[in-house]
Every structure is written in structure tokens, then in C-alpha cells.
Length: 181
Image 1 (tube, one colour):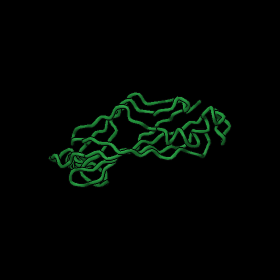
Image 2 (image 1 turned 30 degrees about the vertical axis):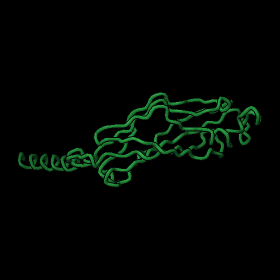
Image 3 (image 1 turned 180 degrees about the horizontal axis):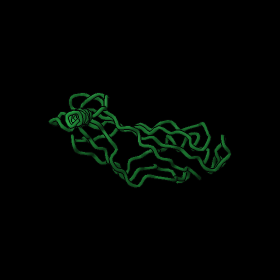
């Protein structure tokens, strides 16, 4: 009886060890980009104030897929761009055009890069439908829903390339913003 129990415990331990040996991420490359921290996410914005809607600070971390293997500077990620895609939360169907911007910086392997005051909406979003409907000069209400606010879900994603040429990207981070007059 003790021999069977010992064998069973050994098999369970072996399966647990093999299961934890590496990450299951199947994306290209040897690293994963992850948004690890952010501060000052916007929750509301006035379209009549103009300017940009920004995230105060956002940190992108470069994590080796298999933490048990050796790393090198070839796993550093040169950051290239980010995109913001908008979707409606309030029942409307019209959305602003996506914002796509180039960025610069290096996220070293086992390290991070921080971006301060990162724009997530600008004049190309504020000056076009549906957000332009909320401008006082255009009546101050969404022509689709009749409301004076538009609630959008913003999905922000970052893109880069390792020094060996592997394309990597973060999973999108999502948050809602209420746009009003």
C-alpha cells in the first residue's frame, strides 16, 4: 500500500514539475510585453476643452517567456508604436477613428520602460464624429443617441520588436471614459 501511494505521489510531483517548466504563451519570440502599471487613467473628458486626453503614466514590462533560461540583451524590445481602439459602451454605434502613434524607447529584458502623459485621444478624435457632435458649435449632443455624453471603452495596445527581429505586443488594457460637453 505504501509503495502505491509513494508511486502516485511521485507521478503527481513529476506532472507538477513538467507543467511549471515553461510558459504556455505561443506568440512569436522569447519575451512577453505586459502593461505592469499605470497612473492617472482618465475617466472623463470635455470635448470643448480641446487638446489631448492622456494617461498620466504607463509602464511596459519585458518578461522572458521561460524564466528558467538565460537572457541576453538580444531579448531587449525596441518599442515602435501603440494604438487606441474605441468602442461604444452607451448603446451608440459610431466610434472615433483609432489613434495610432509611433513611440520610442527600449524595454530591457527583465526590465521596463515608462511613458508619461501618453495621449489616448487627440484632435483627430475630438474634431470628428461622434465626439464632434458634443461640441457647443454642433449642438452639444450625440446625434445618434440624443444624449449629451458619449461613453467609450478605450483599448490600448503597445507594439515592439526584439533585437533579433521578433514582433511582440501587449495584450490590450481597457478602460471607460465619459466624454461630455
